[in-house]
Image 1 (cartoon, rainbow, N blue to C red):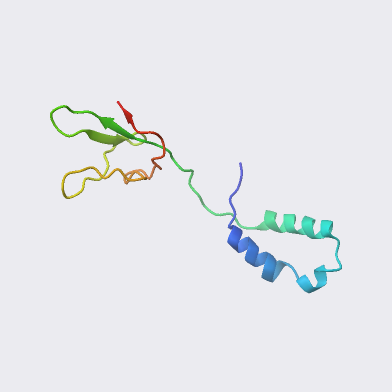
Image 2: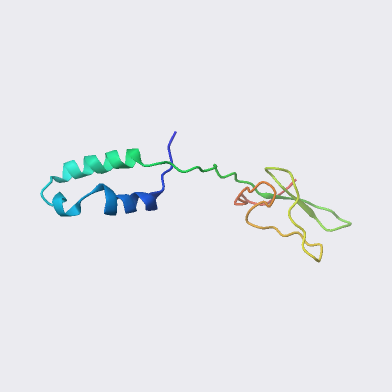
Length: 105
């Protein structure tokens, strides 16, 4: 499984801590590259949650306004002060990224 690292922290470490750049000029590039690869392997990982992808599913209603729900958690989106659904880019209930095409059920 791939592991996620903090790239910004890695850059700071390479620039400030891991290398004495004044002495690197005399070292062959392959040695520098191998040491950099080792340094990357030693970097701490970050916690990350895989992104869930979903879509807003519309339930047509001929009498009242259509209703919607998340295809991942099946919960409805937030309703504004006027009773209209706020179909955001993310589900407010489960956090799924709503980047799939909206569909009718």
